[in-house]
Picture 1 (cartoon, one colour):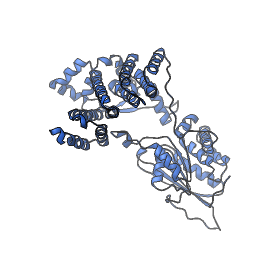
Picture 2: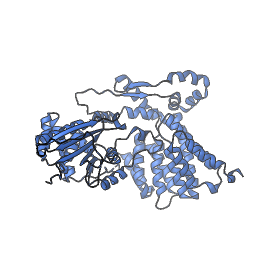
Picture 3: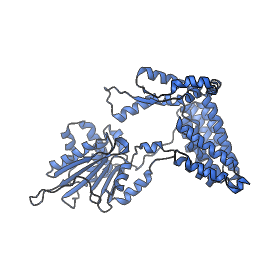
Picture 4: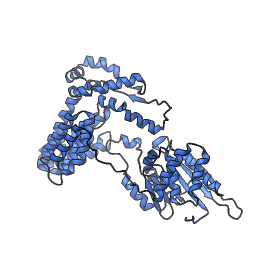
Length: 500
């Protein structure tokens, strides 16, 4: 086993709330102390949960010449031997703070992501670029050990701090035996069997005893019912191979969202688009993805269904690590507006209410304020499950009629654009990204989509380019205020060629 080049080892741990970073820091110090080293640990908490993390700093040292070493309180850029990150973006933060040095630092990180509020709330795809962080981790560290620690935690039934502890031991960057690490877990006396199982997962992954991908792979869905097999056969026969993966996921999503007939409608539309596509069939693949997303729009029925699924309750229990003998309470904040309630009603009734100022004013008062709903209580659970059962009547709803009209209009624009330029058609397919969520988010996206379409249709053919549509979509996704988009649209409508 390799020996450290110095009598001082500096370790920084970046972990989020509830991940046991403090426990991990204590274990590391215990291992060092039990092996005759001096150890000091400090922590500086960030803001709550995902918007920040706590930095735990540990220095391990050997007394030299009878003198006690002077230890720092915080990691110093360029002077950290080991960085341990509980999530990929935390590894990115460590690199941004220059805790990771290419000549010195071993970086141990999970490659899974926990998305920040800012990432989730972005109009477009606000996610940080995971691939770029992984690439930078390999370039900017002396040694990078990365694997999905969340998956390892689930396999072992443990906690991520135990997996990180095992990865640290497996890296052999510290001069202590595996038995010494395991003894620290045993001495803690807390959840020893499960923590040892998690430790083993981390140790084997870091030491190369098991081969793990940096990013999890996603297998294609396989049909398990007669209806699924019929749809699978139809799409593989009627669609180009480039669209099969997205179409399979789309069919699965729409079967879950509505029924077989709705998935058949999805394939009808896909086949129509594929008939005007050419190799390499990128248009068909993109339509398969974006059409499935639009057809599975979020209405009150869908929200009620997702909130009360057994799989969701099981996932929440797993995330908070609730024991079998513990009661779990889940409180949701819900604020359905009159518009969304009317969209769930039969189309004629919903339109009548929304068109009547008197009825809208009277009924709107009932939906002015949101409320906290404890979905794990029988009363609210039954209410939401009853609403979810309205799925069988969805085709009669106002929202269904409106969305199908919007989808057909969008596909008609794509088809017309494809006759001119497949790249232009592709950019219009990607404009579906504007249509997402519900409430204010949905209305803002739909308003932007309609504004872009109205301006586009007013332009002369020579100015209807893929670049113009791509720029308009990019500006719409860049900010909520819509200022950049309106400037882009105003510039187009005020051009001399259009004015003349």
